Length: 439
Image (cartoon, rainbow, N blue to C red; front, side, top):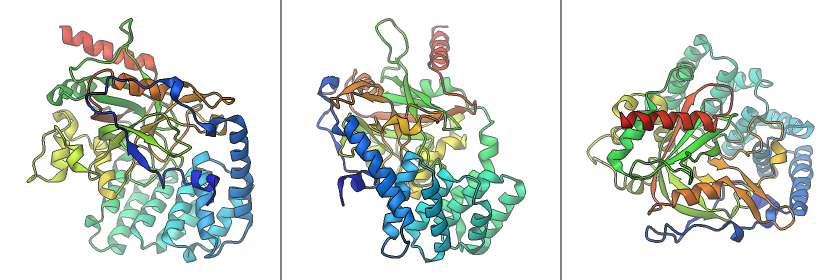
């Protein structure tokens, strides 16, 4: 497997390592002058783009699809999804996938569904409805239902899906992905218009745990970018030398754009554990330090470290206690819990070496999508490969202003406005909160 093929696995073969930075050393900052990536050199980017478009995608999708080439189709789709490439060759590849859909293994069919959701949101509605009628695999059924739901969110469609689940899957209430599918279909239209509980209660409640906390405020429509801020263990917020709240722009959108409980879907809302500072060998993430995060079920011993935990309680109750009372019944904040229960992993906060020009016609430009992580913008020198400007590095260094490399991450969709979350609206939110504390 050559360099390009390894890179195009994106996050499926990540090897992430926790850095040696510990609580005593955490006031040491990372220096931008020491960060460099040859993958960002213009010549390397040109070579990569040529290989991606002509070898990985064009050659693969014009070639035959059979048991010997199925893995190549799957890899090509992962690449097309990551870079959101939709052209005559991907169209031909999708036609071949549908022709042989019942001969493909489950992994290939899952990737096909990711590609349909990402690149062909409406074109295959009728064909996917036909797949649904025959589908007996729970995960594939959920992915197919989600594709169709985006085009038909009627009550009759939701009832039909619920009926199919009951008829096809014995003990469906014990199959986590189907439980979450029904929850999502039933609640989504209500959730996107319902107001969140008071945000100030999140900031107040943080003082029970006295752990550094990053809040990532997003829109329901993840084509728009969000803003994150840092609250230190003492309850204060990270600010610059003039006293202005520091904000960091983030994207919580995956290349596929699928919902939170599907692997490689958008970043789930809810609570995460920040477990330390990490580094990645993946060329598309880049060498900038990242914040390693865990969700429930990934490593609960680390997730609940320094937090209340009752080994005799049900898992969801242990999770809910981390939220203020008014937030405990707000189901969108349980997304990270149920995503973890279903099996999602490796959702971290990182930078990006991807060429943003792939996404110049997208609302989130110049940020770049991931496989469901939280990503921040970075600008690289195309001649030297050195990091020139990095929101990610600023975020990590700001997090490390106070001792400790662990903390919490809280991801919240604040509303469904069709625009980026602005720094000004979050700054005003915190200003009002702090003024309220003085009264």
